[in-house]
Length: 159
Image (cartoon, rainbow, N blue to C red; front, side, top):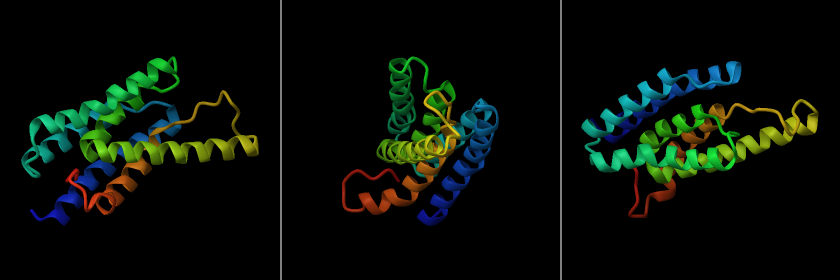
């Protein structure tokens, strides 16, 4: 399988599980485990058998994001939901760690803009709970599409 088709396959799998997760997060403030687990497992095996990535690297990519998110969850005393922690595993196996970090940066910026606009218009206040999965999804897709351009001339390349 050539690189273009492989990238389309990976992106399609991610979108097929992250869009429903985002919609459910907006509607019910929960990210279903079936979305995160099924997507993570499928992408794990795609990376292992199609991309021929090293098992240890895939595992580190998949678990480093949730570790960082769990630390944020503990420091923030539960302000970041467990669904977001689990969703970061999906992001990690999809993007690799450099891409995960880029996606988190973009998602945080988008979430901040959304919260600022909501507070400015009076729709949100300081205690409003904002679903983060849509921003994580948008940041991940953006990072997936842009990371190859950013990292083209570096030794670190997730795909």
